[in-house]
Amino acid sequence: MFFDYTFILLIPALILAFYAQAKVSSAYSKLSKKRASAGLTGREVAEMLVESLGLRVKVEEIPGALTDHYDPTREVLRLSQAVANGSSIADYSIVAHEVGHVLQKREQYPAFAFRSALVPVASFGSQLALPLFLIGLIFYLPALMNIGIIFFSLAVLFQLVTLPVEYNASSRAYLVLDKAGLVTAEEKPYIKQMLNAAALTYVAATAMAALQLLRLVLLRGSRD
Image 1 (tube, rainbow, N blue to C red):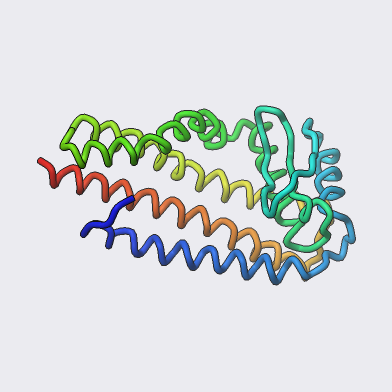
Image 2 (image 1 turned 45 degrees about the horizontal axis):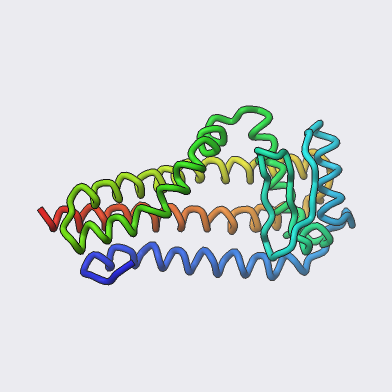
């Protein structure tokens, strides 16, 4: 956003973010080359899990790299082409994680429902927060700075709620793959490795958001 003495607060989060990205990139690079013994493609795994779990979602392929996600508003599980057509441990982990989100909605997992409700508000707030705060800081408009902080707080809340949602989805992913017999005992540690590496990126994002909020509060206080 801009540089000042409070920028030093973001350094720990930046280090964690670089570490998390390196860890997930390394895990994906390694495990995307390790073919799963089940021999199914990611799409076949998704369709198998959807059918066996009695989930009412449609499986679609979309372009892009690691663009996989579950759309709860349209009940669509979207898989990137590489994951949909791949048959590696990494592909299975990603597919099962998204299936975990589908299960969260069906079972009305509280954190998932709360996060879904926060999406429009957090999205709106995150887009306006920093511009409003910066304008207020430059022109010394305390009310505008306060509004910016409130909006950014919503984005931080979204990140905080995202943590249990993502970790819970990863736990479900491991269980559904195991129960479906899609991974062997030798493959299970690799599944955990991939899921844990991916989850760390959410920890880094939350730390960055929280420290950025603290930074805004300190800058606001310096104008009193």
